[in-house]
Length: 96
Image 1 (cartoon, one colour):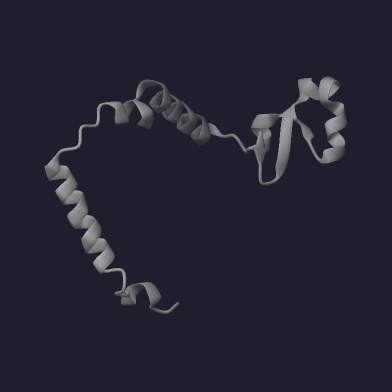
Image 2 (cartoon, helix red, strand yellow):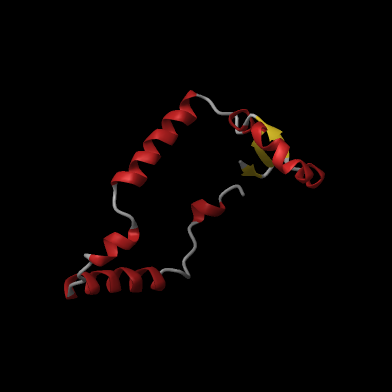
């Protein structure tokens, strides 16, 4: 597991990768290193199932058939957004 606090590898790899300790690599329980809990486990299961059973962007782009109607709509939204870039929302800067 790699993160902002370093790298933690499973304890069973310490015999093979012991020289990595001098570079800050830790060996131990990977699940403890990421503060694994029941909620994280459920998130992992849900997102794993989403990744396995739903189409990725490469598969979705294969069946994309843009129409003139969609192009006109997206162009209108883009022009509207570009036109309103110069206006500042007062709420964003309120008490900042």
